[in-house]
Amino acid sequence: MAGLTAAALAAVGFLAYQASANVPADLSAGSPGPAASPSAPVPGGAPSQPADRALAPPKQSGSGERVVYSLSERRVWLVGEKDAVTRTFAVMPSTVDPAPGTYAVTSRSGSVAGSDGVRIEHVVRFATVDGVTIGFSAAVDGTMATPDPTRRTGGIRMKRADGNAMWTFATVNSKVVVVP
Image 1: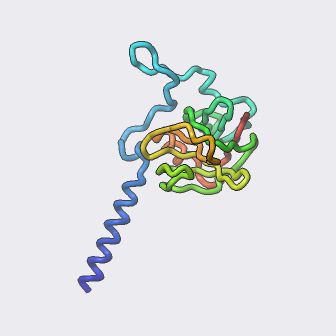
Image 2 (image 1 turned 180 degrees about the horizontal axis):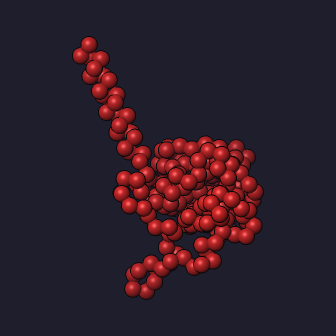
């Protein structure tokens, strides 16, 4: 009986550790992150706010709650109720792009190895192109490296704080609009 109790406690401890390891940074930090990622440093070291143009989603991105991904601007907008942008941020595109159009989030994973071998978190998948799954993710090490152009990958990388926001916003069946 003591063996079963010890095994049960070990299992609960392991599951508690796993749950705490997958908590988004903004939940464990106790305060919300910024609404938008800074666009460029200002002389003197303080980051500037994004230009007003960057805050508004592209006109051809539709309406309603949605994730908007601009291929040309390498930027994502999280658009909430009444077409209000809740967050916008720069991303590093993958080597395989989805075609412009409207998609839905098909699946999510808390933490996995990316197709490039990098450990990633908050994976939000929404498309498949010629067998390559396309989705948003953040590298656990915080990097947004340019992908190897010789490999077919579908991971659209973002900073960890932006990945946390995406994870909270884009649940399964959420609308994703890709624009040129």
